[in-house]
Image (cartoon, rainbow, N blue to C red; front, side):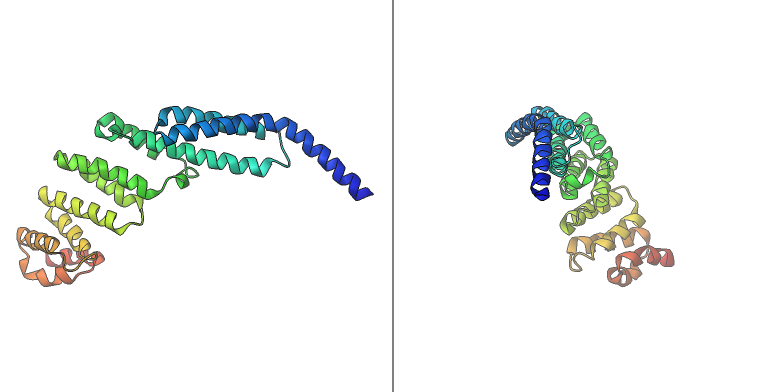
Length: 238
């Protein structure tokens, strides 16, 4: 009998809690569904406002100090925050947003201001590809310093895609060569050989760097060197 009474007491407690939190949950779900629909149609700015309202209403439900709904609410909040942050990422990168300085600075600020617990919601690969769009644009415009800056950001993303990092290193090395920074360029070109030892373009650039530095006689050593050996080798032969 005691067990039955205990269960009935819990049911009554659960019902009381439900009456407190469910109105907030219903509103949050409504805003969340609307936000998803707007994000699907790429209306990212409108979706952003709706996501904020959904998050706020879920938090209002948590403010009621729920016992039975708590973990479900925390899970819902985490999911909506993730969608909200990714929607903001899309808002900052959609269309022509990354084609002018203001949009680029806005995107940089967004990425730089992400809290550690928020970074998990965006794949480093997606950020790297946005940086690639920016850096390639600067490269085509021959704004080499800015291009180099953003290619470096791609490397710092650690996106785990070797083909992305390889392309960034290749452009960085070419920029250094164009700026007559032959020592630095040589190091990067040697590093690029780790991706493909038979890359004729990279081998050609290494030979040209060696010619510019007056150390062509060490060609065989540099072509056989591993990435972490290039700096040491330059110090030895110059």
